[in-house]
Image (tube, rainbow, N blue to C red; front, side, top):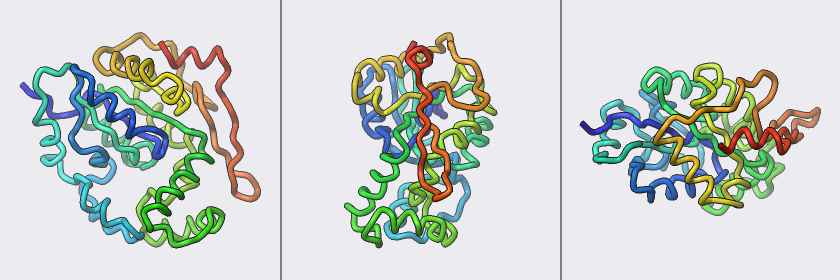
Length: 249
């Protein structure tokens, strides 16, 4: 019988390499990837999708909001040993972890993180390239972020807010066993993409013994973005060589 739910999910972060990882995994002969990247179902199920920002029409057109529509994404599963999807909104959205736990409590989760300042600026350039960013400078866009989100612009306009990884990942560590979550850095994908994809594929196909402990004040490895008095990013590198070994099996 074909799988009707994913066995693993790439949850983000946006502008951190998730699209590359999606297409790499899609080429693996034992992995089925949803034909739609960014279905966003578990974050936006049943929502009206009345996002009001420039270019938000494409979010409305591509988001899957019904259970039936989401399950149809996996109708193509045949003999693959794992099925996955990638939606970067899941890391950021407060409802996503709850919904994933409800529908697929045994799922495996992959997060790919990037320096949050670089990630935010990349998102700004992305919207600027597509002609949707109305302001000329990154600083102006950051200053306008709270107003935009309050006015109903899509979550992806949260250049700053998407980068608070500790807050976002804590929701997942609070609901899933740590051995079901893997956190990588964009630098891992850039430096050794084949190694990261093989590791990700193995974890997606079988449950590996984790060497993590559940984090208390910080992540096992990565960057934490903290707000300063000027409400800008301070990066705290929390990734010694010994702790980095806890990520890569």
